[in-house]
Image (tube, rainbow over the protein chains, first blue to last red):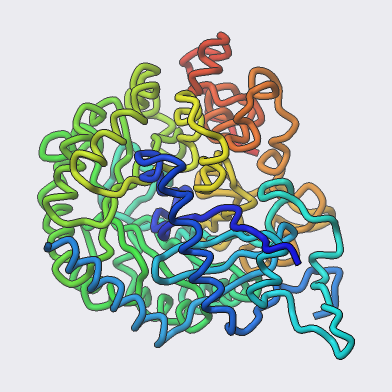
Length: 64
Length: 437
């Protein structure tokens, strides 16, 4: 089975009620550091794999 | 040493809060899934194979065959190829009441507020709808929502429904009430557009001392306190000093917002908007300040053209979720009377066929309606110079609110984008006040 990959990470939370803020601090350190951090996040997610499945919201055309 | 203790304390507090009110942990998407982490705080976008691997795709049947989720019946997409199944976050303008009278206020807030403003019961129903849709976070604002006597109750309700409430405040009113309930929010940012007299130069009145006092008071009782800075030509030269201020007060972040010609801001736009030279200098200036003062920096979605100007690695931008206009996709807004909008600066979108303009409580039904969110979802129909820009899939044409104001057409390329300026696409400096949609 393909191992799969992390596509993107949106860091932090956005308190700004008028637009979407994204953390660009990683632009300081570049792709190398992000490439080092991503496997750590992946390991964290796998460690949490026992979490309950939460399906996406039912679509209008699908029965709930 | 002190920073390390702060970080450790924040981790413990977040873990405790997540145990008391577990936030939504995941949501399936066409590309795979989005998973929320509380330590560190992040939304992680993973492909289908990864989602299967961490158990998000349901159980295998007795024959060992996995029952694929219905949302995966269509071919797997990349992030951004199609709208998400629901917004990541909703921006709720709980009230338009505010006594400050800032000359650039994007909502034109006033002491009297807006007609037909919702109360706690209506906003609780909105939170329920957002939770059912799978929204992760809400950003609460106004007007000045800190003065609302039921703000804490609404934040509690959001937590109970698995949504993390975040807040922006001016710090000019409602501070005592906010201090008592600030633990209920994930992140609180105080608007601070300048230090000392610069604050007045941007906002039109001297409110620095009160905002500063609010920041200090909030920081004494909560770690996740930051500042929002609307970047204008009046405070651009002071950005480094604002980062120094954030470092001095051990704030968790500086969030930089582009000035939008919306509300009273439409009248002040020509005077306050940054110059083209300032837009081109923004990214190096803020990264240097963030490095010098060791403070995290966020920029709002409308700054993506100014980031793209420096030709950063596109893959890195995508991995950091740096997108331009994601109104009606990654985010939605709601006006004080509950009217659904693509973003807080936009007018309510056109009604779905045969219906009325949608309310935030009708998000689920409106989200997939044909033509939903108008121009905000039609960013692929770009003209030059966006159509041939290698950053277009990320930038999405820049800020539609600025385009609508300056050119009269929300689908026009962002007239403040350096690439558009270089191609002679700026259509003059005399703004027209036209609706966004």
